[in-house]
Length: 134
Image (cartoon, rainbow, N blue to C red):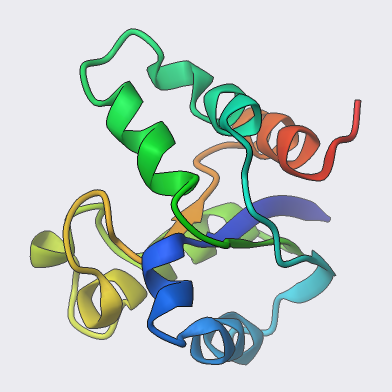
């Protein structure tokens, strides 16, 4: 069974959307294998966003993701990575399809309510970083 990381970001936790976003993924029938409320350290944030280290927005991503609590979770199911990405919608809420999480709850490209892994390799790496597994 495929696994992915789905994470509720600080903007959504600050607006009291944790329950709504968990319900959204549960309605899709994914198996919720792990869930925690966390606050990323700078070190964890830099490791999480390492793929963007050389991009001009890296510092902003790190500052944002460490600004408040996040709720990362491991979801499992057939085709879960693609299904979660479809449920989330485009990174930019203004470009996300109607009914998607980011269209409904996103405020900007950075403050877009949630994160989801984009491939099996990313999922494995992100789950390891977020939950401290080697």
